Image (cartoon, rainbow, N blue to C red; front, top):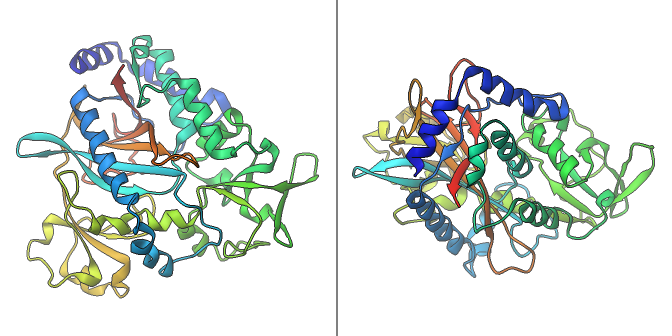
Length: 396
């Protein structure tokens, strides 16, 4: 069945249609994302979908362990610790490379993030693909038989927690300059909350305020947090009226601590068929001789920053803060997407939402990145075709 959809898509695809697809996205806000938009969705077979769900459930089982917080407390000691942490993360993104092992297709866990991803953009991307390829409405990017409106309702509940929209903000560092700002725009339109820069917040006692379009101060009751501390630490030029370590009278939609707890920090603790051999550099007994089969990664970086793909012994020895790096076995990404000009590699990010009272996260949607290079990431050469950000579609 998946072969049928690939053949249908490729037969209907033209460069003119691709340009119209991009124009359709740009028309919403008179803006086209700065990251490359892949020409095609990724058609996910029933078998691969089942594997992805099983792999996600294995990750979630570890996160649900009673001693998970004690296991991951060290991640906060190494970074920032924000007060008033909730019982569990609100958002969870689980990344799998689509790989080959013993001649079989298998997803392998690349990264886990207790942090929101492009939840609103992906929803709209599905609509855009359907506009230009109507037969795609037979498929869905949603998991667990979730319908589009139900997805938006779940997302709005997670972000707002029943607070008035004006008292909930999407918080970011200079949001208008971020690569992912298309998602912010869709969030503002579809959920109805304002986008606020960290420098525009006003602190009064334990409360935070922002100024609305009329210049009136509005109380912030809940923050949909999109701030990455990596970037915040580097931006010494920013003047903030508050500190994330302050004891504030505010709720978090995605408490900042979960960014550190659920991250590459947990990869060395995971074992199983969907997981990759990963060692914390501080616990590495000896440097492997076959370093060509490994990749060096900082624990808490974002979007592939600081990753050394062709790692050397000198690279490892040069690391001073060894608790902040992992050495991970490389995996054999399988070129699986048939383009008009050869095959392309894929990485699937399963997006989850953990409702406040639920015992576990709900798998809701996905994000896919396509690449022809050695590493799959958000930065793509603009002259490469059939690579970039897209979404995966399942049979209903």
